View 1 (cartoon, rainbow, N blue to C red):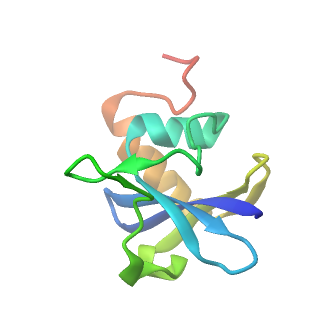
View 2: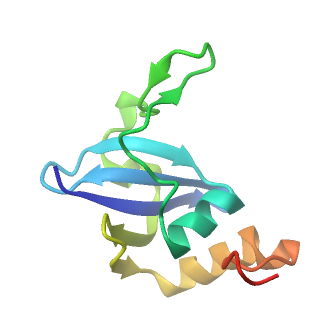
Length: 116
């Protein structure tokens, strides 16, 4: 199963990272966006393991997907898409820089973990 990892945005701060099966275009896992997760997505993607289970509010294993929102488009606009290997497949420059400003610059942070 080939996957791509997408950063999607509904509104500023309402953003999600998705693992999407390339052939079927089905969302197989989601992660709510935060600065640590986005820094990982933008740099080396080692923390984005689509096979590791998430837990729901009761501690039960789940893949984190709301099945009423299976198509990736329902998670918002694509900010950036990468292959499993890390190759950049797509970037919307305006949404990308708006996201960088919201998640990192507004907090005096840099999206690269080696920079302070």
